Amino acid sequence: MAGTWRGSLQARLMAGVVLLAAGGMVAVNAVSLIGLRLNLADAADATLAKARATVQHRVRGHTAPVDEAALNSLIPDGFYVALIDDRGRVIARTQSRDLDGQLRPRPDLPTPVPDGFADRPLTLTAKGTPVPRYRTLGFRLVRPATVRSAPGAPPRPVSRVVVAKSLQPADDVVYWLIGADAAATLAALGGIVLLSRVVLRVGLRPLRDMAATATAVADGDIDQRIEVAHRHSEVGEVATALNRAFDERQRSEEQLRQFVANASHELRTPLTTIRGWAQLHLHGLAQDPALIERAMLRIEGEAARMHATVEELLLLARLDQGRPLADAPVNVGALADDAVTDARVRDPDRPVTVDVPDEIFARGDEDRLRQVLQNLLSNALRHTPPGTPVSVAARALPGDTVELTVSDEGPGMAPDTADRIFERFYRGAESRDPATGGTGLGLSIVKSIAEAHGGTVTVRTAPGEGSTFTVTLPAPRSLPASRSLPAPR
Ligand SMILES: Nc1ncnc2c1ncn2[C@@H]1O[C@H](COP(=O)(O)OP(=O)(O)OP(=O)(O)O)[C@@H](O)[C@H]1O
Ligand SMILES: [Mg+2]
Image (spheres, rainbow, N blue to C red):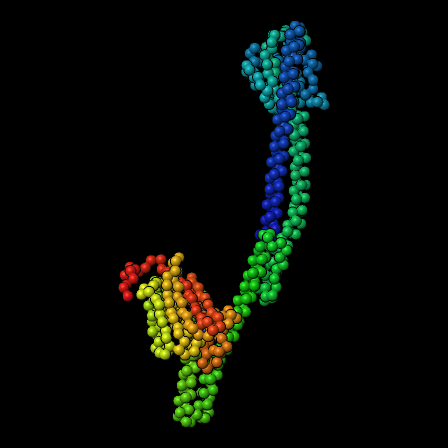
C-alpha cells in the first residue's frame, strides 16, 4: 500500500505542490531577512556617522585631557570607543555594555590598528557565543587631543578614534524573525498538505471512476461507459477517448461473433449435404452405380465449395491482419485483358468489351489485383441475365491514381442493397439459393484488397440502370525501366 501511495499521481502532485510552496516561502523569507539585516546595518552606520560628528565637535571645544573613567560615563550603552595614538596603539578604551547595562566582550581590533582602519563602516566580531557583532567606524581627529589612562597619569596624545555599535539588538530581531518565519512556514506547509490532499482527492475522483469503469468493461460488463461531465477538459477528453475505445471493442466483438456465425452457417450447409450422401452410401441405400456416382459428384462439388469458402476466409483473415502485400508495379491493363478473356470463355454468348491502354501500371500485388477483377467480372456474369453487355476499363487519373471500372447493363440494385453489398456474407435476395448462390464474400474481398493497397472501391447503381464498380489504386512511384514507354498498339 505504501508503494502504491508513493507512486500514485496524487502523492506526486502533492509532493510537487508542497516542494514548490516550500521553495517559494523559503526564498521570500530569505530575501526579506537579508533586506532587514542590510537595513539595520544601514541604521547603525547612520548612528556611527552621527557619533563621529559629535566626537569631532567635542574635541574642537575641549582641551583638557579626559581619562578612561570619564570616557566610560560619556558613552551610551551599546556603544564602544577606542582611542588610538599615532603608532596605532590603543591607549584608552571604554567598556561595552548591552542596552540593559550588562558587560559584553569588546570588539577585536587589530594590533596595531592600521592607518585608515574602518574609514568606511565595517562589521567586527568579538569572542563569545553567540558571536557578538559590532558595526565599526574609524576616523582621524580634526584636532589632536590627549587622554590619561588613569587619574593622575601623564596625558598621552590621541590621533584616531574607533567607535563601534553593538549589532546585538539588530541580530536579536533577525534571529527572532528567523524563528517566527520558520514556525509560520511549517504551519503553512502543514495547511497546504492537508488542503491539497482534499483538493487532489476531489480533482482525481474522475480518474478513479474511469479506472473502475475500465476494469468493469475488462471484466466483461461491456455495456458500461464512463460518465463525461466536461467534454473539453483533459479528463473529459480521456473519458471520451476511452468510451470510443469501448464502443469500438464492443462493435468489433459483435462483428467477429457475426462473422463466426455466418462462416459456420456457410460451412454447415455443404457439410450436411456431404454427410447425407455419405450416410446414404454407408447404409447401403445407394446401390445403383448411377446414384453412387451422383453421390460422389455431389460430395466432390460440396467439398470444392467448402474449400473455396475456407480459402476466402483465410484470405480475409490475412488482409485483416494487415500482412504486407507485394508492392511492385503491376500492369493492370494486361490483368484486365486476361480477366475479360476468361469471362468470354466462361460465357461466350455475352458481349464483354475491354477498354484499357496497353500498359497501365498500378502499385501492388499482382495475384490480389487479378482476384479483384475476377470477382467483379464473375459478379457481372452471375448477377445479370444472360447476354447482358459487360465492359471493363482502366485509366490513369491525375494525382498518381489508377482507376479500374467494371460495368454491366444488368438489373442494377436498390439503394438499400447497394449499401450492404460490401458487407461480409451479404448476398442479394436473388443469390441466396444455397445450391447456386455464392458465399457473399466476393465484394468484401475486393474491398479489403483495395484498402490494403491504399485504394477504394465504390459502386454506382440504380434499379434498371446496371451497375458500375470503380476501384482506385495507387500508381507506382517509378515505372519499370523496360516498360516505361507505352508500346504501340
Ligand atoms: N453486378 C451486379 N449486379 C447486381 N447485383 C450485384 C452485382 N454484383 C454484386 N451484386 C449483389 O451483391 C451481392 C454481394 O456480392 P458478392 O460478390 O459479395 O457475393 P456473391 O457474388 O453473392 O457471392 P461470392 O462470395 O461467391 O462472390 C450479390 O449477392 C448480389 O446480390
Ligand atoms: Mg461475387
